[in-house]
Image (cartoon, rainbow, N blue to C red; front, side, top):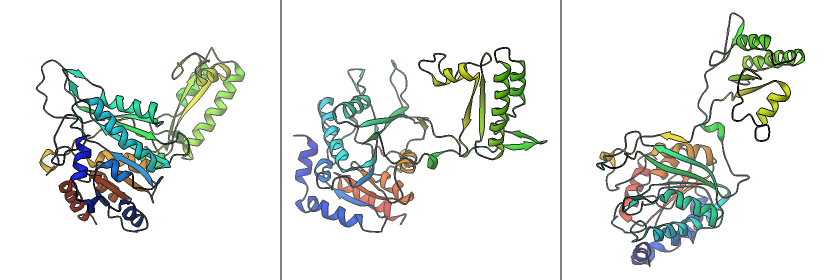
Length: 365
């Protein structure tokens, strides 16, 4: 029996009753105040209805890092047991998550006998191979400055992993336009359309004219399509573009027509265009976010920063959705959900953390 289970059984029985009733009442409550539930994550989740959660966003206790007052996951003697306990929680997360839902997992690594264990990827591959999750992104959280590191025989570690899983590879909610960065605007200078990065088309017209690789028919076609693309820039349909011309530029990824549609297009037409979305570019899978200020942590030793929640919530939680954090600690996920106008449900085994989380939530209501 894990410490998580033992501590859960020691909780007053009143606190572990009627989770289903509380959650169902919360579903119809218009308030954005989070629902907090005290207890072991697996036991509480077992009482929640199937397919009732839109997004799960969580950062479970890291293995062997800290001993929290209420015990719980992370104190196992062997890391394999730690991974198994997490898998039990995430199996319940999969059950309560809607078909259209997403699961975001931030998890840190650990060393044993100087050997980096690769815990994030061990759990990620276990979830895809054994539970059938689909892994859509592996994000590197670059913590910019990180913490102190006195080791003398390895590099300083200033990153953690964030994984985005979906329950189904098709039909999951994803608002890509909600997380795009605003693009620079195209403009007209002396009657010439200039893209966001200064592309006018003049250089490409000259390259087409001087090309020894393109036939006259291909040149005429290239001129015509280039004018159409420039008009799309002028109309705001695209913000920028690049033109790749046979014999003058390399294909984007591969010259093999077997593996690259671009290479095939270049061979058949003599050119192709890369068009930039008018609403801007989407975020990359490396996020530079400062960790939580150590002076503001209060009771909790390792809360993640609220900025880490922004892209997951903006991209994958619908406006009327409910966010779940089965290891909510002092409620950063819940606070972020409130700021995004979403309802949320937090579970934790420590009553002191939940009281602090509730106070944080009430401060923004």
